[in-house]
Image (cartoon, rainbow over all chains, first blue to last red; front, side, top):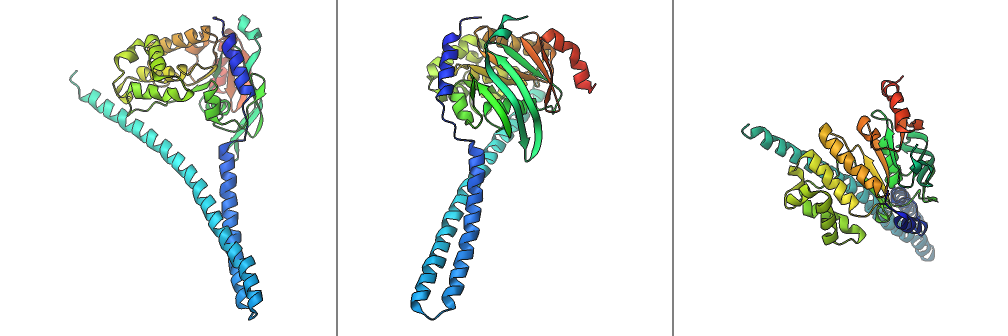
Amino acid sequence: MDNNTERIEAFTEEIGSMKLRGSSASGERTLVLVGALSLAAGFALAILGGIQTSGTTNQADQRAFMATGSFIGIALVIVGAALFVRFSLARYLRFWMVRMVHESRANTDRIVQAIHDAAPQ
Amino acid sequence: MSPLLDAPPLLELVDVRAAYDGIEVLHGVDLTVPQGAVVALLGPNGAGKSTTISVVAGLVVPTSGQVLMAGRNTVGARPEELARRGVVTIPEGRGIFPNLTVRENLQMATYTGVSLQNVEAFTYEQFPRLGERRKQLAGTMSGGEQQMLAMARGLASDPAILLLDELSMGLAPLIVEELYGIVAEIARRGVSILVVEQFARTVLGVADLAAIMVHGVIRSVGVPSAIEAELSSAYLGG
């Protein structure tokens, strides 16, 4: 065996200095969940705000209900939808890309096999 | 017994459990790869061998346990970060891009910062056949040449730990022997290698240590000569 000490030392140092942040997959799942929950909570708040606003004729109360209910609710819906779409799309696109590579390889294998079979012996 | 087995471990799996969609497939795996050693992980189809490789490479996050590299637990590390530091995986099914040329495939190895010139120089010296086919679409090469390309791409990034998943899949016995000759050559340079194989005989010839995995647990670990005797019962469910 050649002396590989330098490489192992470099590897040990690099692994030691690595920042561990948890897996991106589990982080994505969490963010998809956070997005879905925000979306649901936003809808609920917006509807509640609408009901409360229409339930009173006092303009000051209406403004307060709109601010705390509808506006926050709508903001949550937008943020939740953005998170949900962004991170569920990332997962979908990753699967799609793997699928494309797999199919592309299978197609090439089939073409090569067909050319091989068609070649005169 | 190989003196390499007394070397300190570069890779160590401690009570690793992993699951897919809640179904556990690794039930507490313990495995050690000493520095510079070739460790063969053998077992029948569905034993959890490839999942073990995926856990080490960071592609599957274990539900519990530790993956120690040079003594540090790397659970949660991103696969690309591990690859950049020298944990190189050559996956089952080769993992090359069939619609790219050999040269373009090699370009993919430059993610670690190595120049394409260096990658090509290394590859064509190690695998002269790839030099002759540098402009050929990778998918139109023979299975053995495709596997060589996958190996060249992995080796060009100067691995510290090399993970080989089913190197022999779909290849003729003579090609498999040739490829394992190259694995032995890499091992002589001091790279620690974990190789997963379903068909065991050839890999036992180059391994310093072998383990048999059945149903997600390591059933036995030992020197290749001792493990060879247990293979039949492991594969036939004895």
